[in-house]
Image 1 (cartoon, rainbow, N blue to C red):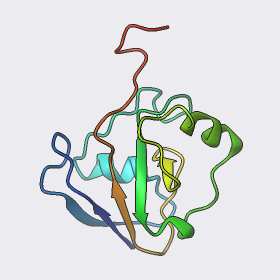
Image 2: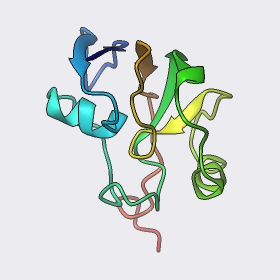
Image 3: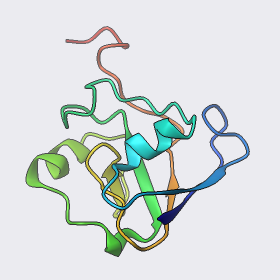
Length: 113
């Protein structure tokens, strides 16, 4: 099992959270399984940026992002060098600390097509 720490997020996880998950689990699935309702508008198919997270610790333990993920991340609000789409990033064996950005860009909920 791998330790995952989620930094506080005002709406989704005000107190922050810590839990353990099986390696190979997507960060998105790990968050959802522990009651952190991160947005995932494309149903985890790597077609949007609503599940964007910033990996504060353990970034190097993740497999590199695909070209498709990198292209999408360019559109994410608050992009940082250690940004990932949580639906694509899989937990390894090193502990992770993630931050959920304050905002997300959801073109569907914003009425854009």
